[in-house]
Structures are given as C-alpha cells and as structure tokens.
Length: 291
Length: 252
Image 1: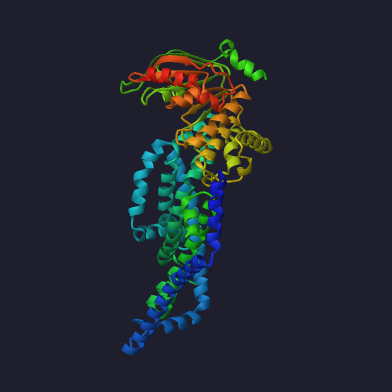
Image 2: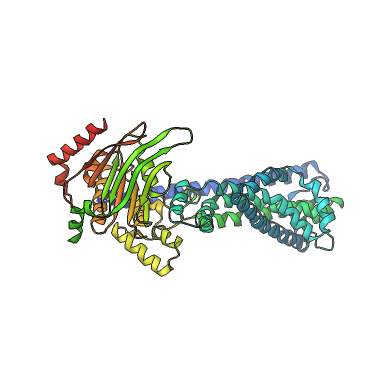
C-alpha cells in the first residue's frame, strides 16, 4: 500500500481505503465468512443427529456403538479421570515436542555446518521416519523403564523428523546474494548463521513444527499404550487401553475425542506462534491476513 | 566547492584500483576475461559497458574481491568497499533501518551508533520517513535506495555497483541517477558502475570502459569531459549524442 511515489498513486490508495469501508463489499465479505463458519457446524450437527437417530432406531448395543448422548454422559461421569489423563498426555507431548524442536534444530544445524555429518546422518534420518514406532516402543521401555521418560522419548522419535527435514531444507536454501553481501562485510560464520540463515529458515522450521505438534500428541499416546503406568498416571493412551479392555466404549469415544482436541490445541498454538512471528514479512502470514 | 576541483584533477589523484594484465579462466577452460589493464583514481566515477558475456560483472566482482583473477595483478588501495547488487537484496524480516544497519551490526558497532548512522544514510537517499517500514511495503525504486543506503552506511571509499538500476522504470532510474551523482559529489567516493545502457554510462561517468566479449577484453576507454554537476540539458546536448555514438560504434 505504501507505494505512494506521487499524487496519482496516493489517490489510488485513498480510493482503495474508501472501498474497504463502503458497505456492500464489507457486507459480502462478512456474509461469506459467516457461511464458512456455519456450514461445518451445521454439517457436524446433522451428522451427530443422524448417528443418534440411527443408534436408537436400530437399537445398537452400547458396547458396539454408543449414541452421542451416551458418549456425553460418559464424558460427564468420567470427567475428572478424563482431565487427569489428558493433563498427563499434554505434559508428555509438550516435553516430547519441545525436545524434538531443540534436538531436531541442533541436528539440522550440525548437518549444515559439516557435509560429513550431513552425508553421515541424512540416510538414517529417513530410516528413523520409516521405523514403525509401535515396534521399537517396547525396546524403549526396556531401556528407559515404564513411565514418563519412555513416553516422552517415543513422542520425541515420532515428532523429530519433520523438524530435522524442514529446518535442513530452510537452512540450505539461504539467498546466495545475501550470503555474499555478508561475506563482503567479513561476517563470521556464527553471525551469518544467526542473522541470515536462521531467519531465512524460520518459515520452514515453523512449518515443520506445525506438523510435529500434532505428531507429538500421537507419539505420546502410542507411548502410553506401551509404557503407560496405572494409578492415574498413564494419560489418555492408558485410559483408552483400559476402557477398551473393560468394553467401556462410550468412555473410549470420549478419550479419543479428548486426544484429538488436545492435538488440535497443540497445532493451533503453534500455528498462532508461527503467524505471529512471520506477520511482518512472510507471504504465508500476509496472505492469510488478506483473506 | 572543493569537491568539484577534486573531480577535475582526478587523473592526478592517487590510484584506488590498479589492474595489470588480469585474466579469468573458468575451470571448464572458458576465458571470461583476458589482458585487462585498468586504473581507477580516487574519487572517480567509472562505468563498464558492453554486451552480455563480456565479463563486465566478473571484472567488477574481481575488483570487489567477490571473485579471483586467475592471472595478472589486481591491487585495491582501500579495504573499505561496498557492493550494490542488481536486486536490492534486503532481508524481508528486518525493517528498513535495520537492513541499513546490517553492515555496522556485523562489524560490532554499538546499537545507538548503528541507529544514528543508519538514519543518516537513509537521509542521503531521502527515505527517513520509511525507516520503520518493511521491504515488502516499498516500491522497487525505494528498495534500491535502501540498498544504496546500506552500502553507504559503512562509509566506504569504494562503491561497486552491478547494474543497480536495470530493473527500474525510466523515471525512477533517472531520479536515482541524480541522487547517486549528488551523493558522489558530496563525498570522496570512488564508484565503479556496471551497466548495459550506454546512455546511463555517459550521463554518470567520468570515463566509460567499453568491453567486448569472447574473450572479455577492454576495447576502449572513453573519457566524458562534461563537468559535474550534470543537468538534463547535458542529456539532450550534441556532446552527449556524440559520446553515445562513439561508444556504440566501439561496441558494435
């Protein structure tokens, strides 16, 4: 907007500004936003209604498919347990996520610093991604023992790959001209990394963190399946396992919904941080502002 | 003004750059530059013109130390050099003033002094009002001004410019020509300017170095005697047309 090189473009700017406040355009924009919000809500309400109706009409047994109302009742009844379990999972996923960010970034920085490390590590970073976590989880439990340590570690394994891969991509796509410019001013490697390569990689890193955030929650739950301990310390994974064993299908649904809400909260938090830190300059943040 | 007197006696001033029989051969055997002899005096404004592939940018990069000659001798008197690229090359996450302050930040100047000197450099290009804007909010011409301010902030003795105005529209380009000449006249900068526009070279320079390709060599060095400050009248004068024709004939 600040392209005002002369009077003519200034006039264009004011014209645009007026356009923004003129009522028909804004009304139309608001209305489309309203539809965008209402449509998915209406959709889910209809779906839940049909589900409730179907279960009542066909008299499905509760342990096989509970009605939404049963799930709601189970949620209310088991609410303190559910919150405690979700809280445990939250802590494990948070640590898993934060560790994956710190370690993943460190690994990517090492890979940038030395081609030997890059060549040495790269294939195994991919292998890490393809190993079925469920298969190595028991091994982790053998090494670290059941409980929080193992759960955090499994969450870390699941979440770290997108961080390494995206940070690596970001760090290796630094603008060449800017690097030359900094070399001309005799910038040290540290200054170059901190002031140029890191900010340049930031949008990539944040993209990786968005993916990892949801995966850390999934990893924590997988970890709890395998390494969860009883006595209200097992998190959602443990709650899901015990609900399944006891055929408490309604509560099982409640746990699953809680798990996905937790993952969503993680994702939205990271997405908000990402948007906030890129709002001044990166296309991704600017474009979504204009929509 | 003493500065104008200095310009007239530029040929007797000390040498800022001396290149003797320099050449550049790429690893695949291509000869980019050959048999280059060139002296640039302190306070001079020299342009390199020629068709693409004549090695003018390579020669500039060798002078700036961004590239190495494979033969001959290149002597630069001052370490204090800045480079302006074809694109503005600003960091999109930094405000205008923080972009300008970058060279000072690298050399460890204190924050307060950085800001003050960056604002002073921005004043030279008339962008003080946009100090806190982000690059994406600026037009192409304004971005290039920021890039020039960033080059000036370290108070260089030598300024290397690689087709800096190539991507700008005619009006903006001409305004920047005048601003650049103004900055140059009020300082003791030595400027080496690469362009493919003969008009631009004649309007700005004290000497124009005409180059030809395959391999890149200097064909002729043409002095432009017109005194500074140069006005629009110079652009439409017979002398101007004469110089443009002379250089164009040399190049073709």
